Every structure is written in structure tokens, then in C-alpha cells.
Length: 280
Ligand SMILES: C[S@@+](CC[C@H](N)C(=O)[O-])C[C@H]1O[C@@H](n2cnc3c(N)ncnc32)[C@H](O)[C@@H]1O
Image (cartoon, rainbow, N blue to C red):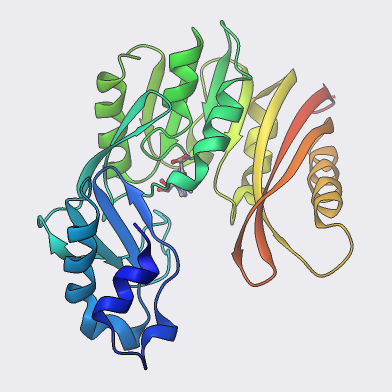
């Protein structure tokens, strides 16, 4: 579907310049962000999209910024079936989600696979901010491992439990409801995932306490593009903090993932722990 062409049919020319250029489809739900000036046209837009996109059963509009600890923004259905729950397939994994209650995006699909492809049989993994299992499920499908998967949103844990059953990874993924900082895994951890970009830094002490020497931390953060090399700055910030925490570490991979606001981008670092000095 060419969004622009659909919108041209239903919007008066004076508001057309405010029309969205992008949309996201999760399962059979299409999600748009609309400026306030376009809200009066929301259901017209939704109906027109439904006609043009056979697989889509619901059109919904995000009406605020991603907010709160759960990282969910309000969602309003504007056309089609009145529901916000769907099932999304990604690289052979099935994710059941209620998009009004939990964080989920298709924009992380490459990253989910990139991390999952590194996990080996026998590893113990801690996913500190698991959501409905975007990382945990593909990891557990690819390797005979254990993935402690923590989230403080009870809905995320409920859907994670369902996704564990749907993807037949019982026993490999262990859902844990609570604050990542309060969960101490029963064994030392080979790999820690920290997919909470705005706050990961403040949880590095917890990651440092749980990770084994030789283990890997997948660290997510927001970088500000203001000249220089923000990825290099991020590497220094994270390895410096880890050193303060008694962990000697080396960044073995770093990437700017995508833009999230003017001059702000998401970034990932894979950090290999070389040695630990805490307790000495
Ligand atoms: C960006 S989302 C994670 C996305 C998920 N990893 C995925 O790939 O789909 C961040 C998640 O962290 C959870 N969260 C926020 N603060 C937390 C905390 N202190 N402890 C545990 N979970 C937390 C939120 O509820 C949310 O589900």
C-alpha cells in the first residue's frame, strides 16, 4: 500500500502536508501516528487504509509519546475490529501482544536475530527488560539455554508466558515479574541483555554483579549526534563505568541502530567482560 496515495483520496489538500509518511504493521494491526490537526480525519483515514490493505484488520493511532516505565503509548482504534491484541510472526517466532498494554515494535527484528545468533547451547542468559520476549523467544528457539526474562509490567510477563507456550520453549525461558535491579539469578550469567535505552546505564552495576568473566553484555543507549563520534563516546562511557564497578571490559561491536528524534539515535554495544576485580 502506498500510504501517500491512500491519504490523498481522503484528506483535503491543506492538511495533506501534515500526513504521516510511515506506519508500522504488527500482526494484523496497522499503527499510525497522527498530528492533532489530522485527528478529525482519523476514522476516514483508517477506513481508506483498511480497503487498500487486505491483511490488516485493525487501524489504530498512537496518541501520545512512549511513556512510563512500561514504555507504552496510548493507542486508539480508529477503524476495523475493536481490539488491540494481535499475533505477530517474526523469523519463525510468534509473539502475541496487546499493543495498548505492552511495548512491542517490529523495528527490533534485526537486532533480535543478531543477538540470538550469538547464543550457544548451555549458556545462561539474563534479559533484564524482556517485554513479551522479543529477544528471549528467538534465543531460546535457537539454543538449548536458560533465559531469565525480567519485566515489571505484569501484562508483558503474562504475554511472555503465553509466547513461551506458543513457541514451545518451556523450561528455557523463565519469566520473572519485577524490577530487574531486585532480581538476582541463581547462577552466574554468560550473557546480559539491557534493552532499555533510556535507563540501561543506571542498571550497569547490576549487570556487572551478575555477569561471568568471559561473558557478554548487550548494552542499549541513546546517543546524541553533535559532531565527533558518538559511538566512540558511548564506548568510553560504558567501559569507564564498568571499570569503576570492578569490571575490565572491551567493546567488540558497536552500531547506531536508528534515529528516534532529531539528532538522537538508538545505539547498541556488545561488551565482552575480560576480568573482574570486585571483591578484591
Ligand atoms: C524497550 S522495552 C523491551 C523490549 C523487548 N526487549 C523487545 O525486544 O521487545 C522495555 C521493557 O522494560 C520494562 N521495564 C522498564 N523498567 C524496568 C525495570 N526496572 N525492571 C524490569 N523491567 C523494566 C518495560 O516494562 C518494557 O517492557
